[in-house]
Image (cartoon, rainbow, N blue to C red):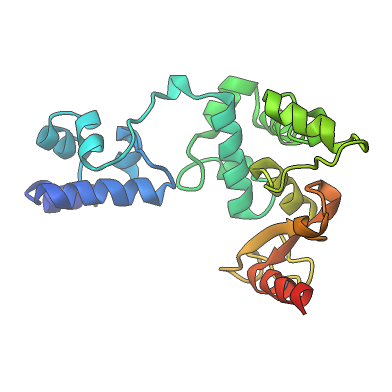
Amino acid sequence: MKFELVDSLRGAPDETLLEDLRRSAKAIGRDTITIAEYGEVGKAHPCTIQRRFGSWPKALELAGLQPSRSKIGISDEELFENIKSLWISVGRQPRYSEVKTPLSLFSAGTYEKRFGSWSKALREFVEWVNADSPNQSTNTDEELDVARTTYNDSTKRRSRREISDRQRFRILVRDGFRCKACGASPLNLPGTELHVDHILPWSKGGETIDENLETKCKQCNLGKGNAFIS
Ligand SMILES: [Zn+2]
């Protein structure tokens, strides 16, 4: 199968090959792609690309993609971000057998090597997600500053309005990836877009804390906005 496709793109114009590189990167949800990944989802053989453009990095550059990093250089942060995306894709805790392309950027083996086992990786991941809570943040000085002032009644400063990715994820998990108003979920209604938003709007004094956040589908979320105006 693969070899028929290779032959079909071997004589293709440069732009067709570059376009397929971009399409493949998009298909795996990234702004770059490795030779191995392209070998799985690309229409041409990676060798065709390398030969045409001189090297893999050169082809990525011409396609307007980011340079790919070696798997050895993957940070814990990237591994956790990937679990988060995977969790959102399947709408629940990902199973060991699901830790593979196309949903996952990294294999289960990568997690086993780093954390000892998939279940240990999940445990570390949950800690990472929870470490984002404003009262236990250990990240930047700015975040610590916000955390301090959030719990200080003597100041008018409040929690930041923006909901972080990790907090959003925590709320989605807490709410079971379902709209709190109508129950719609990507699991029972494919294409459902879930939003995490303030219950009491930030503009009306609502804080960006888990207790004041909830999951709503796009439709119900828009409806809520109107309800507060009327
Ligand atoms: Zn809804």
